[in-house]
Length: 237
Ligand SMILES: Nc1ncnc2c1ncn2[C@@H]1O[C@H](COP(=O)(O)OP(=O)(O)OP(=O)(O)O)[C@@H](O)[C@H]1O
Image 1: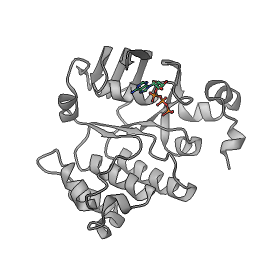
Image 2: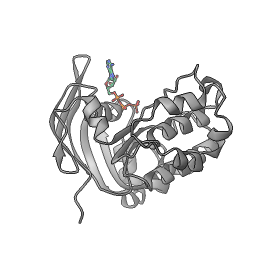
Image 3: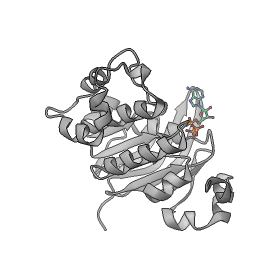
């Protein structure tokens, strides 16, 4: 088995004086999508931010075998960790083209790849990002990360608040993103997880309470109910 791209061991992080990541240990395989699941407020977003060094943290984190837990955020990003934050966070007053240009980190940004993946954004390059739909803004956010050659992509709740049809489009874009780099995806939508994820990590109260094969978890409604508090029949709509 190949070495995991990311290895997280006993990660703890404090946010506003509160311990929100208590003890998080998991691996992200070198290919595919690893989904982070859990009820609201259990520390999924904080885990991603702690990995990026945006929150004070302790524990051991290795990226392709090298320690990154003592590095500053800019160094972690320059080692090839892309981040697509929750709530999209586009520059609303700037055009699509300007949003993309500002995200170019590498000497040779992958403009052609991004143009191929997101033809709609090419058509809308002169449109102000704040006037795009939620789904289109999510595409801008993903496109910004994909312009650079990532060793790992961290993507936080990309389908949150989107209409079902748009969720499908975002999932397609994510599948294409996952073909370029392994993805660590925080996601609540079980259909998206079923479509994309190979591995799952379930967090509860700042701790990992389950890791394993995504299909295996999705085949076990009782366990989903116990871990996530959701009935799969309700999610199958
Ligand atoms: N800046 C902050 N100040 C105070 N508390 C915070 C801050 N950021 C997060 N928290 C708290 O830390 C806990 C974990 O939040 P986090 O956003 O990581 O959870 P989450 O699992 O991503 O939740 P959700 O699924 O609702 O986005 C929550 O109780 C939250 O209220």
